[in-house]
Amino acid sequence: MTTLHQLLDALADAFDPLLALLALGAPLLRKPRALRPALSYYLATGLAIGVVYLVRALDLRYQLWGSLGLDYSTHSAFATALVVSMAAFHRQWTVPLFAALALYFCLILFMGYHGILDVLTSAPLAAAVAWLAHRGFAAKTFN
Image (cartoon, rainbow, N blue to C red; front, side):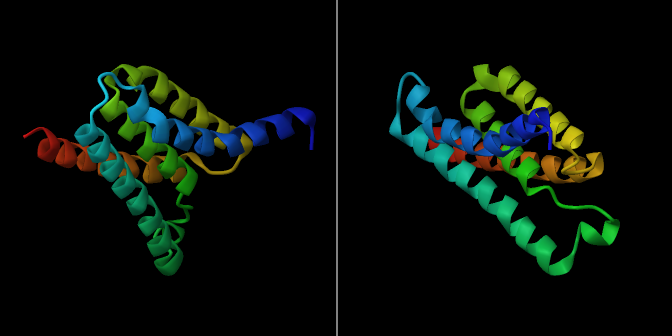
C-alpha cells in the first residue's frame, strides 16, 4: 500500500467519527443556547442515525441492496444523516457541510470502497429520514 493510499484510507476512516464529534458539539456552538432546540436536535439526529442502522440490519438480514447487485453504504448514510441534521440546526453550515460530504463521497468512490449506485441509494434515504425527523421535532419544539 502506498503512502498516499494509506493517508487517504486514514482520512476516510476518520471522517465519520470527526463528523460525529462535530454533531455532538453542534448545540454548544449555537447562540443563543437553548435547551429545547438542543434536545429536539439530539432526538431527531438520534432517530436518523437509528434508522441508518435499522436499514443496515434489514439489509444484512434480507439482502435488500445485495439482491440488486449493490452494497448498502452505512458510512455514506451515517455521514449524510449527520450532515443533514447539522444543516437543519445550523443553516449557515449547510454549504461547507455538503461540500465536505461530496468530497467524502468522492473519496469513497476513488478508494473503491463503494460504487456510485451504493452511495446514491444509501445517502438519499438517510437524508430524507433526517430531514423529516428534524422537521417533525422542530414543529413540536417551537409550537
